Image 1: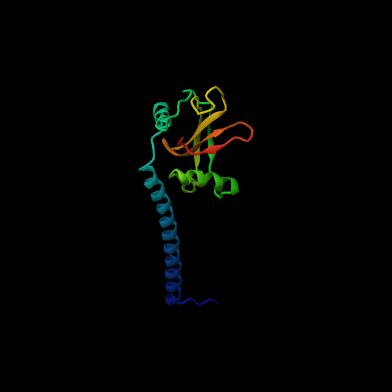
Image 2 (image 1 turned 135 degrees about the horizontal axis):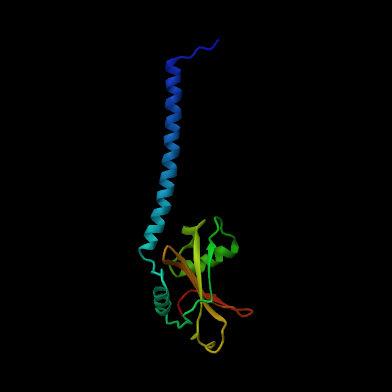
Length: 156
């Protein structure tokens, strides 16, 4: 035979509801803080939703490019960064971008050929990569695809 006390049952329900409220509050605070970080960043990010905006962004650094991209694809920013991603994010941090705010996100990678890189003007090996999320640049680099090449931020 089971005997339940109304007083005991009410306490249990209150405890469960209280715990649920705490968990929901934590989830809400975390999701809003991530959204705030992205929204805050987007306020200073450069538009890159269409070809003209991407070309204007690239030109603002003095680069001349072939207007047709070499490559366009969706890429995934991993949830956890390994040494390679940490090193790449250091380049981003040096130019006021931070890919850690986009861990777990899918972004569009646009790659263009630079035609006026000093010392490489006659070669097809210098590229600029833009990482774009929701129409805004969130990172990228300039690199040489030659053996023992280089990689740096957008500035010359």
